[in-house]
Length: 259
Image (tube, rainbow, N blue to C red; front, side, top):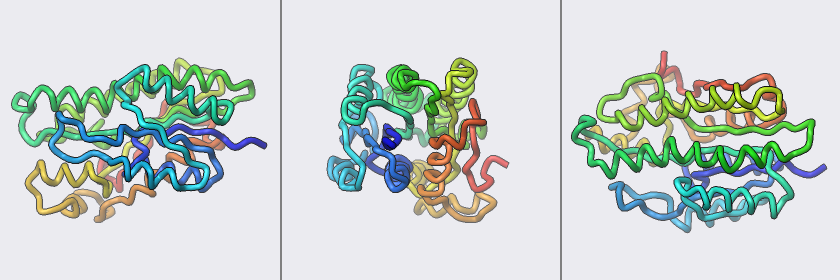
């Protein structure tokens, strides 16, 4: 039996890399997609080529450099997965960035644009490229389109307005896609993480002038930061055929942050 084929954006580090590792460990063939370069609009470092190369050393994993904001690049990534493994079963939009630290009207426009373009438009762009590929699989199919939202989709976070708006958009998008995909055998779902130990959380701590990301642990009922692999475990379940009863869902993996 051929392995399931997955494509994961933001695959070089954080939740994306943890998801690549989790899926590959379960026998999936995975294309890890990342820009692997800094964004001049954002004041903190992005994943590096070395980060992406390290993920590519995992069994069953290949890498692909692409910007989620670029429709042609996302189509090329999907085409590469289909060329290499004969099709696509799972597409996961995990690429994300953050900016803010001041009220919305004081955020530099280029930073606001980067947050909206990567966190929301990037998910839409992957959906446009990947869902037709998921539907190209013959019936009975078990295609999965997944996205990483955030507790910020429902909880207003001061000085992170654009991030909240983008993540709320992701939640709305997967609900609509779940309805649109109907009985096709392809589902659309999202996870909504809380404070997870990733570079984005470290940048959030800097934006809030906190000593480090560990300061966010107290706001979650579990009284700790989440590990990216805990979020990846839920994404891996949603990527599996066993999740067929779920579509249009936004699953909290937030340590109780949204309570």
